[in-house]
Image (cartoon, helix red, strand yellow):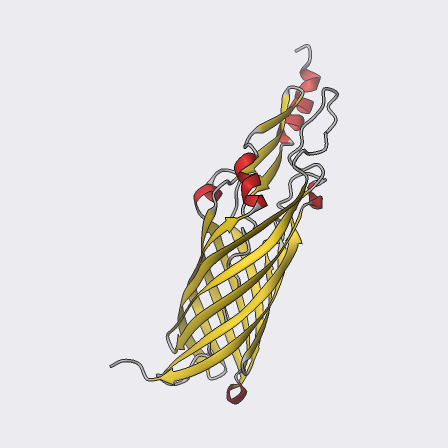
Length: 281
């Protein structure tokens, strides 16, 4: 075959397709931590209300050597209610947020006739703001007076976004970019204004001093945003949270989705009040 030696190069070129993604500003980070009362050792139900917030800082979605220029930052305020008992726990609340997503110089860019990558016409910082609802439900078992395991839980979040980023997501096309005769880039855009995320999770609670409500919590969750985020080229989200509670104060570090739109969350929640009551007969 006359040009058989070019076949490996063609296969290599066609296989090196870079994928550039753009979703909601809160995507991959909407399953933030909600504090809960310590698991009671008796048959009572512990209920508490919390107010607080967190800051989130991280990279973009990735996709190409120069996509590391993408970044995002946001701040979030939340109010939540939670109930804990020996066999389970639930939490629910509302939140509001604002931030920006920065599109790098060569993210969503095309090529000139000589095959050189052009600066993106979409580069720049895009602000967003929004509100949402958040909740969770867990099965629980008390393995030790100091150790409770919320071994299986479901977490969910609903959010609606407004702002320049929303406008960009509804304006930028979803398409394939060619460099010569080969497809080299794919643009995956989710234009939905609202987003729903579901996840399964597990939490471990270690209490060191119940009189002072001192405890340490570790949580791991894996989930997926629905609608447009179920399409080809999108991905599951995963996060790990470490939280420390002392009396009315809860501090947490949340590490989410390191490889794709990864970020760190630093948060604080204050417990307004806590009540205990026996279960209904």
